[in-house]
Image (cartoon, rainbow, N blue to C red; front, side, top):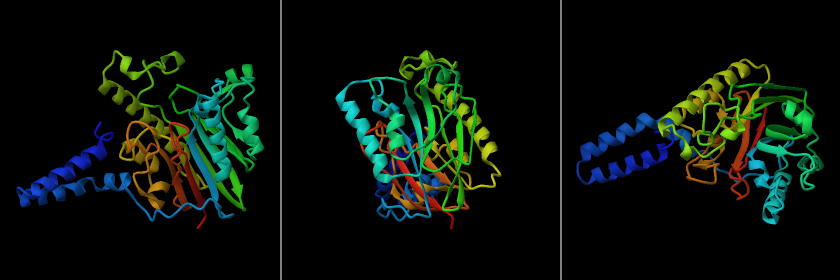
Length: 328
């Protein structure tokens, strides 16, 4: 709870320090010094990078990765609503504009023969000929898929997925290896479970997707349950990626803010691309709060983050995160 509310708590703390300046300067000084206990969390929440304008034209030696929770293409996949379809087309246009080499998408879906919408064909026309996701029994039966996916303009040298124990959707850790300008990169992505979209501990049942408000269990129990699940998933992810001979770029929708234990465990000694190259809060979730940065790109310390941006367009409920990385 404190992690979710950290920015608000910090603002309240600073306000108290200012008020105390007019009442007791010693107390104000003490409170100000206590602020530095949370310095690590302050630095991870409020980026202090150079914040240079993002160059749409990419350096040919860099690998550009776009991470985006597309919310089922703004729910246009099973709708004939013209507004939703226009929004989906705008999402495709944004991808075309930034022209990433690798796309890591969460809440991606394609459904065979639904209202003549073929998002696979559309992305393939942009050059994303290589697609990787776990082909489940459901996919084999009806050629439909709902989950996390990696698409690439570069051929996959190797692909792998690792179940992380969520059992909620087809969203395990996905890992792909690609070569750009003779340099090899490993791209990994995962979608950690949201804190609010379940109504029982049996996460394998899709009918469990109900509002958290309607639950019998309490709010604190829900936070504890999902937080523990995230910690277990993080251990599986780190165990898999630890010791990779190829530098890893880890990105995804982690559904936690930068001060959470699980996010810091995933980051480890990797570079937080947003913090390194931007200034400010960098919220990636459109709704609820201007402080919710829950989508990330962490680059291996062997790699250099050239540039990073959060594209704040009202398309999905998440904003896309775009990162250029290269070998030093």
